[in-house]
Length: 597
Image 1: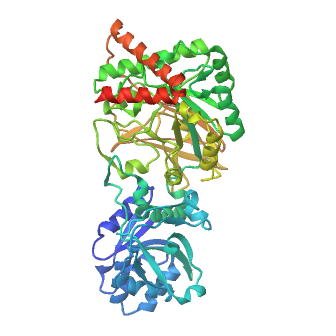
Image 2: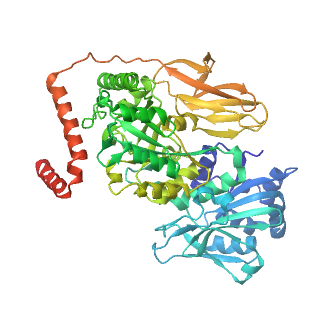
Image 3: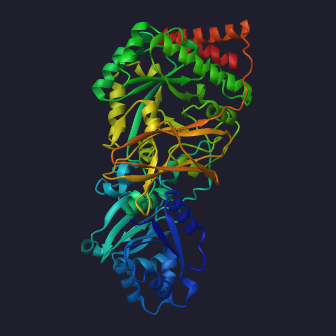
């Protein structure tokens, strides 16, 4: 099994070469760099590396390859070496100019002669449906606009019929990302001048799809070529989350029995983001429904009192008190109703601080699932943070993102391509016109991949991790939550090496594998431990953190309690009555806007 990518460069790797290296290493691959100007004849270092070796995977900038062809005295020998010894060749940074005019005719036997610019950005990317082994979850997707500053089109000549060229991605029906076979080598060409720098920062209002041409083609290539040697997810999961409702027969436009019927009809699963303050207010009939249908319906923790920005504070003592109180209320609710809950936090209004993330880790919560990725006291995330299936840079506690149905299908497709679980959020108002809309949404999400499974939130978070095969057949697992179920899906015994980003900002009490303590190590912010699993065997892995922050003493002030009571009552009046009267709702919003001025 191959896990090494070879990067050809001139004297030293430039920024685009290094960006390819970063992306490959991010996917779990190792890289070797060959500098062609180490020798007067570029054939020498290439031949030296390829000696007695087959199936080499190489990436190279168009300019580097152009210089090699212009410098060598043996052009045909260099071509034969590339086409016969190299299994896969990815040529990037192809843009209009001398380099592409030299390389493209030589590489494609005059099938592709050059690249051209687009006149504007008013065009769409379109991913082919015919190369699903390469495009995967992005097959058939189309969206725009393009980035005409860095995206170009291949000028394909009259010899196109003589060479079978796969159009992986096109722009305005013009070839943008293509592949073809030459002797023993499968060659990939992408007409863009930029590869994403995963260490660069992404703004709050920015979106991964804006970088589509900079990271999707190289990721498609790497995932296709290296397959299980790359970090990947064996499964794709989805869950529909509804914020705020009480567990009554009806809440606003939400009817639980109708929701359940729709879940069976369309085969999906839902989670109610339940406000712990309502722990004594659940209807017994609905409680029984949740208990008997626990594979379809579940609840998680939505704040504590659900007051304005309650988790936006940086006071660790106050946060610790709220987080513990929320868990206590949910435990009492379980005793009263029999409904189990998922130790997962959804922040009210999506507002949270870095300290809130640390306190959740401090209290051994499983994860946070949120609509916003940024805490109120941090403005920066790296693209590598967003590319991961969970954000781990917020106090080293996993934050899984969720999306609204109004987001574009490309957003969901990119998430699925990366391996992220597809968490979709709405409120009771989504059901204003009935339940046909949720069926349409589920079908749209399922159209991305046949692999998608709709599961309970806790089942997803406890089984959603990345894996890759090592050189000796061992299996590496990159986990995110503090509790995970690891299964050996292979036909023979395997050694599993568990890895987790760990800063030790909260002390580790112990690590359990099926309730047995195991040794672990933490080096360079990477936690690691290992164990053997028989074929089809599965184990429960749990990392237990030691609480090291004191809670504030309970302070049940009557005025504070009354304010919370009023807020909750007003919210329910709005959702159960005012929302059903358009004129009254418009009037309330007008009054609210005036009061906020």
